[in-house]
Amino acid sequence: MKKSDKSRKIPSELTYNLPIIEFTGDRSVLVEGSTGVLKYDSEIVRINTRSMIIAFFGRGLTLKCISPTAVIIDGYITKTEFIR
Image (cartoon, helix red, strand yellow):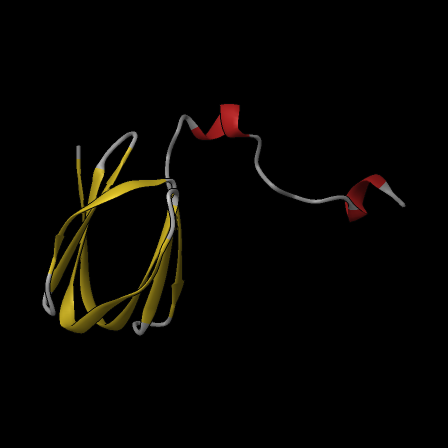
C-alpha cells in the first residue's frame, strides 16, 4: 500500500478539539465531537462540543441518532450558527 492510499483522517491534535461536521445537502447533518444536546425542537437544535456550541435552524428537525460523541439531525436545515 502506498502512502497516498492510507487513511487521510486529520490527527486529533491538529483539529484543536474542533467538531467534525458533515452536511448532506440541506437535509441532514452529522456532528462528531458532540458532548450533548442543549436544546431540541422542530425548529432549532443546539449541540454542545468541547470548543463551541453549534445551533442548527430549520423546519421539521429531528434527532435521527444520538451517541456519546455524535449526533445526526434530519430535516430542512436553513441556517447554522457557531457560538464560542
